[in-house]
Amino acid sequence: MFLGLDIFLSHAIIPLVDASVAHLVERHLAKVEVASSSLVTRSRTKPILFWMGFSFYLFTKWSNTMKTVFSQKKFFVWLFALGLPVVGILLFYLLRNTRTLMNTWVSNVMAPLEQFLGRIWAIFPFSVAESAIALLIAAVVVWSGRAVVLFFLQRQGKVFLTRMCAVAAVFAWVWCLLCWLWNAGYYADSFTEKSGLTSYGHTPEALFYTTVWFAQNAAQLSTQIPRDEDGHFNVPLEECFDQGVDIYDNLIQEFPFLNIPSVRTKPLLFSRLQSILGFTGVYLPFTGEANVNIDAPACLVPATIGHEMAHQRMVASEQEANFVGIAACLSCDDVVFQYSGYLQGLVHLSNALHKLNPEFWTVITQNFFTPELSTDWNDNYFYWKSLESPVEESAEQTYDAFLKGNGQSLGIASYGACVDLLITYYYPKLFI
Image (tube, rainbow, N blue to C red; front, side, top):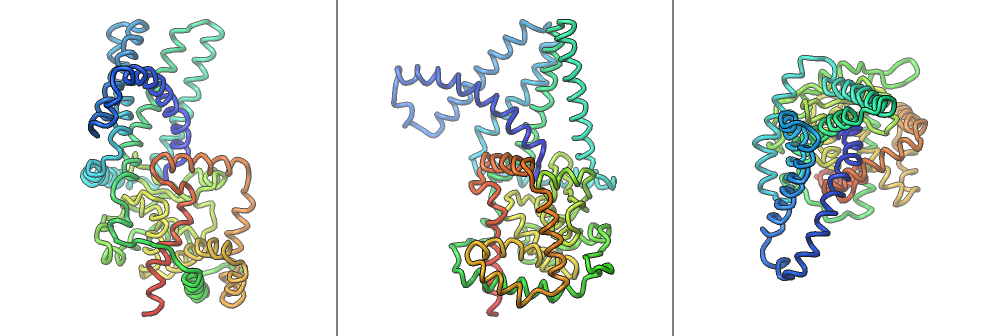
């Protein structure tokens, strides 16, 4: 779940590229329609060649403009710094729907590279990518601020243009790398396709009994969890991060394609900011690091570790990462992770059940909730309730747009769609 930087880039860089391309396409299409209307129906290769031609045309126009501003030596520097990532971005958007290519890229390049990077940066106890992003944002603010001051106070227009091009180059490289190191996963084979867990819709009865089963197990385990004198979840988070590397050992027996050596997840330094934005963790593909918000209620931190480790295994879809993380927790041998997994699954299932019939949910809470489970449930509810704000709503809307822009038709609602997978996988087991 790449968050703040994804959100900014998706609204700052791509719209500019799309607008420029759309303007050129509109002019070119007018000429095409006059020449021949049969181009639309000839071959599927025509649109790709057409867009590649326009990409080259756009690149040429940009190159000529840059030549008039910079010397020949500086021009080639900018050609590499800004032109190369833009070409990479355009190629990604041209080729992203080619499933075979995306499968090959994710399996043979993206996954091995990120796993290698994750092991390298695992020697540091903190999130290297988070620190780098914070420094990058600070540097961009200072750099851009100085450019504005020079422009308005000293009228140094060329310096201003140079600095703005440098900022654009940085964000273009970040977005290009994000496209090829993460967004490509949205267009490769999904967990559902690999596992065969296809959902065809479920009855209210299936939803109710699956929710009851999760509630029963969560209640049973809630009394086995270490707690403080007030009854709150009191497991040291460092232990959770240490134990997290083993939680997939049993699940990979059923789903071998998830069999990737685990890399320890890391706590986020700016966890409170993540909570304000409404997120519990983030996977950063630039370093292969899975990061967890430790400001959120501790009872669900183990389940979040499972979710982010699913992303390490190239499970890109949020609905599938939710399910895979929960399934890993439930199948492991650690009681703390089992409890957190049941609690996380219960949160998703209860949201769906409450919308269907609030009375059903009331029956479950009255008959199955223990005092310990109720405490954890309320801790989680009131924590997130206290952070509701226009900032969180705006972040959710922006991330929703980001997901939909990468082929996730349900957008942020895909978090709730994991209910289908939970019922598909666990409801039949109730009768065994």
